[in-house]
Length: 91
Image 1 (cartoon, rainbow, N blue to C red):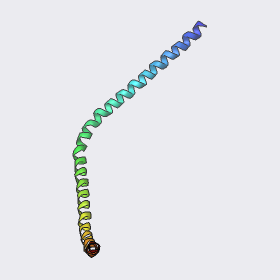
Image 2 (cartoon, rainbow, N blue to C red):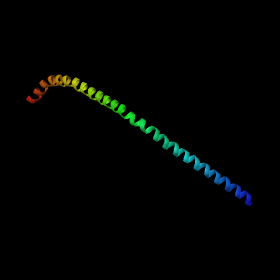
Image 3 (cartoon, rainbow, N blue to C red):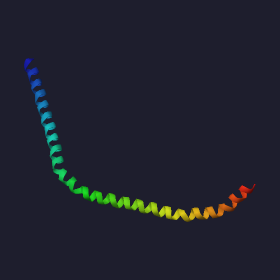
Image 4 (cartoon, helix red, strand yellow):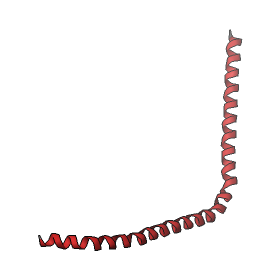
C-alpha cells in the first residue's frame, strides 16, 4: 500500500514540476515576445501618427463640405420663410 501511495505522490510531484516548467516557458515566451516587438512598436508610431493626421484631415474636410453645403440651404430657407414670418407678425 505504501508503494502505491509513494508512486501516486511521485506522479503528483512530476505533474506539478511539468506544470511549473510549462508556466515558466509561457512566461519566458511572453516576455521575450514583448522584448522583440517593443522596437517594432516604436517604429510603427510615426506611421500611426501619419494615419491619424490624415484621418483627422478627412474628418475636418468632410465637416467643412457639409457646412458649406448647408449655408445655401439655410439662406434659401430664410428667404422662403421671411414672408411667412412677416405675415405672422402682422396678425
